[in-house]
Length: 638
Image 1 (cartoon, rainbow, N blue to C red):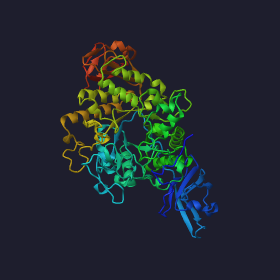
Image 2 (cartoon, rainbow, N blue to C red; image 1 turned 180 degrees about the vertical axis):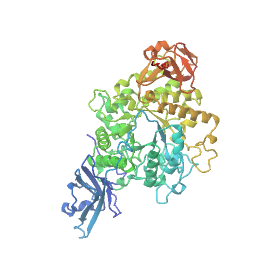
Image 3 (cartoon, rainbow, N blue to C red; image 1 turned 90 degrees about the vertical axis):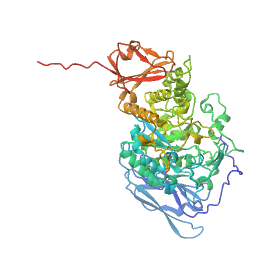
Image 4 (cartoon, helix red, strand yellow; image 1 turned 60 degrees about the horizontal axis):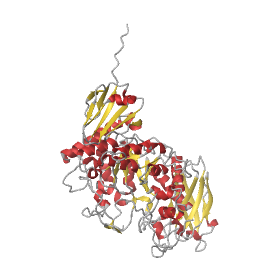
């Protein structure tokens, strides 16, 4: 049983709630939702002290108050409604009065909107293996509106590009300004690190005093950070992206909130937070979640331990909190017409909550998909946290994971020499365990991200290694994502902090000496890298085999790894030579997939090769070949 123990040295439970302004969450809803139930969280000083009969819904056909629930804090009231099918749009009005204090009648208004058109077609389309995701951090990508760089009434007022730990001023308008660039690269979806309000002060971490520039310290789930441009800029970005056919993925955090979140200033109840007798950090050991031999203590520390002292860990078993967060996800999807979700710190969250969240989203948006960040080292662990073929007591309903096992295996294949289980053999072995996933194509594959050393540095700043890595990324099974700047060879290691791999995109900020969004601002090597990514992304986008086709792989031999992507329309052969010596492939050795073809076309160079001859694969290179049949002569009809 989880213990929730008050920590007096961290937070005061009942701070005086000074504002008399009433707030209601969610601030609006929609008719025609598949789930007719709606929980309203009303926040106002002493509203929890009113008698049940002192709040009532003005007559509205199809809407009924089912129950009213009070909590420990007197400043909250939870009202549970039922909105029947066929209810018309309009405004719900609640009248209430504090007879205990005065007889003044007050009013709450909740707009009920009509259902938006385009669910599953123009928005909430989901992310699938035909997509290519571009991951960016808005604060470090481009500053499109310097007027929103800082606000005097926020806890962090600094925008200082000279300090890698501070905010730099990038925003959503900056992303809008460079949608052309993202499209030129060949991406079909944009994943932005969180845009939710992060009104936190600088916090002490190992690298020093750090700002919440990355976006993962939420302080209000229903607000878009105004330093990003606020709700208006987010609307504008989504409309502009959708107008170009680009999808938008929102980054979510359910495991924790920032210590300055308004809820922490007046907790509805102490059991909304996982408290400990003294500060308890999470172990980060996901094995404790699925290990059949694990102790209850280890599981509790893994799930309920905190990341850092300034990120209170949420008790997702609390039904009021769980509903608040699930409704917020639905509200965000519908309000901003999102296409998919990436869920941060997935493995640390209560599993029942996660399945309820995914089911609720899919009920309202049947095509919506979510990618969970489960930083694990084994395929079995990754499979546990998404839809799988495992015989386990708890079955995840998550669409797919961010596939760290494949990421680590691809990087090892580029860095280490071939061995019985090392080098490129690790990638082969990792993919051989795809039997554990319900749908391996639903997993997201990558070479780096905002929490990892940058790929070009890991690749030893070697362009051959870069080409091999990009070649793997855009031809292997799954949904590829590219971290911003990888395409122009941005580099660095996480030393002394994560900020070193989150540097500004050159040209995104006023005064930058070079604008690498433009071909003219890039060096020759940067243009070669950009063009290689764009060329291969274009090939992939047009290829049914590379996007949705099956995978067949052959056991590597001396570092030569051959695999096929294929369907009934197309077959693509990929040959990666990770060795330091040249290798040759004899196509007849792969006749299971090649026997009905005559030639092979290199998708990058356009060169044509006969399948009756051997083909040399230079050391440290990848070849991507589309197999072709002999053209059929037109039959002459007499």
